[in-house]
Amino acid sequence: MPEKSKKEKSYKVLLLGDSTVGKTCFLKRYLDDTFQDVYLSTIGFDFKFKTVTLSNGNQIKLQIWDTAGEERYRTIAKSYYKGAHGIVLIYDITNKNSFKNIKKWISQIKEELSNKISIVLVANKIDMPERIVSEEDGKNLANSMNLQIFEASARDNINVSEAFQELAEDINNKCLTVGARGTKLKKGDNEKKKCC
Image (cartoon, rainbow, N blue to C red; front, side, top):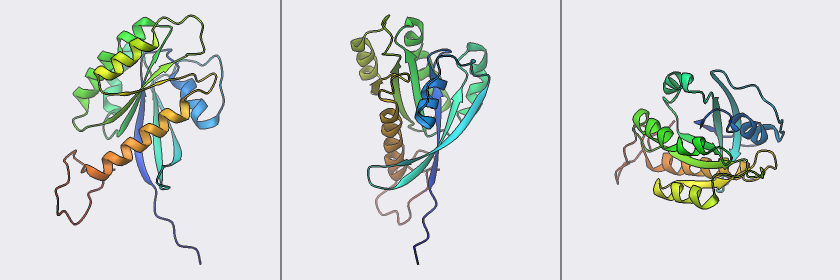
């Protein structure tokens, strides 16, 4: 008789970034392996689930929230930060303002989330010929904030799965060593605290 499988751990992930940076396209490529040129702007929030197999063979479930990037929704967005374990922070390499605003997004994330959250930075739309934000500028920003960066294209399916995989691995690793309230486990703790 096959062994009953353990319940998958579930982690909340937010897609953040300015409006029109391609968050919905990025998510659709990851979940369904599809791409559409035109999407209506996300109004409010939508979430989907994806099971991810980690490098150690274990599986976890990501609850991925696609968020509206417009300024008027940002105050609402704060309420959805609660309980988040990871963030995919996206900017558009053809839009300088979306790149400049990454620091504002990071500042807001730090305000709302006290525990050490996993974040990956995504430079989206590298398939576009009219690049404005250089790869070097992206790397410098990521290094200054100690973030992993992925040059990506939802259209051409470049580094989409890789960004989510890196985030899932990092979330899982942090949850093995950090308690639910963001406190590190002490030596001698017999029981691991759950992170989710």
